Length: 500
Image 1 (cartoon, rainbow, N blue to C red):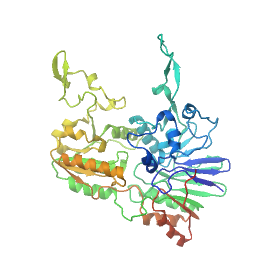
Image 2: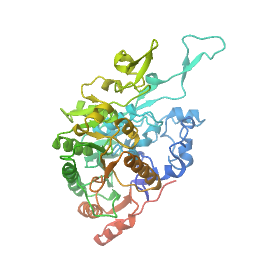
Image 3: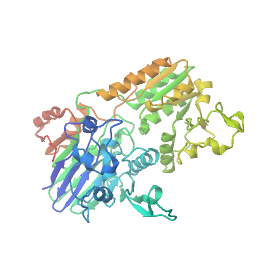
Image 4: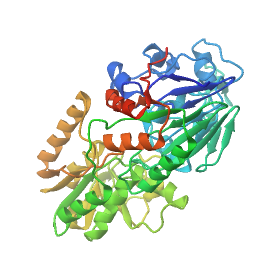
């Protein structure tokens, strides 16, 4: 009988890390970050130390204290031993949200990762475009390595740090195909695509000699790709599972808002409006991007995205998911703030505008991955948006509010298309957002502008009844007691506990 240990996702939304063992074989279902636990100990300016390997994370239960799964450079740097072989046969990533995938960073590179192509592209974009610590998701950068210097000066160390591309090594990444069987020893796995609030989400069907296990990951029935979730339910019912690990994020509501309804309502609000329209949505939610891209088309505006989202969209376009997207890329000011033709610099005693400078000076301050966007015909700056407000639908999230100082809107609409705040930290940020929006005399639009990535209570219960497992483990939920009604259907409910 398969042994299941829960190292996250218990009595919380997110943090999924589930170890499944069958005889001498084992795998993890997701390896995500627990925002709930992390926020108890850390904040924006109080972060775990990268120089302390995994120890800061293990100290507070953010990472399980399991031998044979963590990277050698972190272990040896901390004075810990590293097993010759990994102790698990693989990690299955249901999707690329951080509460399911962030702690892949800490895993040794020879543990195989199994994930969809879309999840891989999102994780690659995250690693390529963010400079935060602990984001080595698809490539591992070996830390604490030294190499001999080519030129050695007297009194200085003959060694230098190995860094940059020279330190990169590939992870063992396996792109999985829908419903194709893969074997990890005595455990066979199949992925089942489901609809969620970012591309590439999937559930997993696991089979051992005497167990059939369904892991839902995160899913919904009201998105643009709901038929994928419906197929998963049908396939799972035929699978006749003995155990089902089921998400229950929204077991407290029966409400749903679809992408189509957001598009319709936003189009009605924006159509005919002659001033700034600014929108804030999760930039990796490409369904939501598509919603507002269509709103822009419906209202004769051009969608403007930031460089991070443009990078992600390029990866998906190159992968064949999109073609001929008619949008603009926003170029923020960097370093000396030369973008926009208004800034002046002193050149040989004379103050000149940046239009008189060599193009190489315009690139100053931009990261390597950002420079590909600087010469695009469809690139725009604050000046374009300021002077032609009714031509654009401008994507500007919380971390880009400073761009409004340059755009200087005198009035306009700010569409907040994200989940409402549900903890103290989010409440504080939301209040800051309102302060910025009020300062620039923008009207905030929130009602009906966000659709969840999760199924509601009725949908979850109906799904479980159709799949009809022998036993259900509620996870990724703070409303586990709502599952108990399934006992009336002869389904056993087992509330998981965190393993130590």
